Amino acid sequence: MSGHLFIITAPSGAGKTTLVRLLLENDPAIRLSISYTTRAPRAGEEDGKAYHFVDVPSFKGMIERQELLEWAEVYGNYYGTSRVWIEGEMAKGKDVLLEIDWQGAAQVRRLFPEAISIFVLPPSIAELERRLSGRGTDAPEVIERRLAVARDEMRHVGECDYVIINNELQTALDDLLAVVRSCRLSLVAQRENHGELFAALL
Image 1 (cartoon, rainbow, N blue to C red):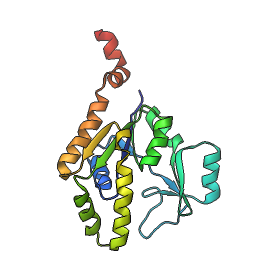
Image 2: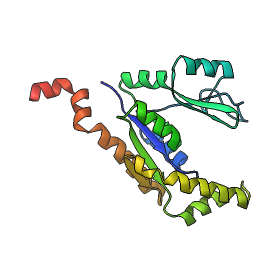
Image 3: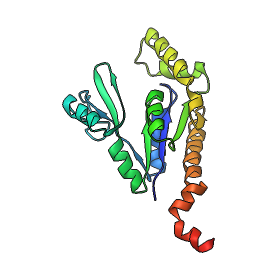
Image 4: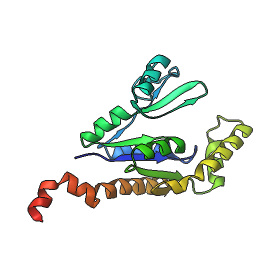
């Protein structure tokens, strides 16, 4: 028995983080992969919840030992996903969820071609701009830059297996839960997870 690897990616403002939180609340069988980072913890962040916080030599050691599924350097800090943890959880039959950007998703798919990738889209550019502005934390020029980045990210939607348009949150969550459930009910998954039953019946 082996678990599924789900990848969720989206532009900033599409509602990915909220959907992931609700998915985990509604489906406790899914384990969220916690990334490693060399940046310092921010106020309120706990090690092992937001991130696993490590120093640079430790992170580089993980790279050298090929323990990371994907990694990147962003503004002088390293971020990465543990391949060892994911493979261990999946070997135990656990479903694992990765919440990463499209570049990280592309790296993961090269190593795990069987991974199920899900792209979350906003219902419109206008709504995306409204959501980004509604945070009240960024200046107008910052929001414009975020929108430009979002447009570039959304061009990669064709690389994913499923697309969820997050117009109404409950509908988007229902769609996400449906994707997860349908993958668990595939012939390959059912044969692997219920081999004795298949042998007895067939």
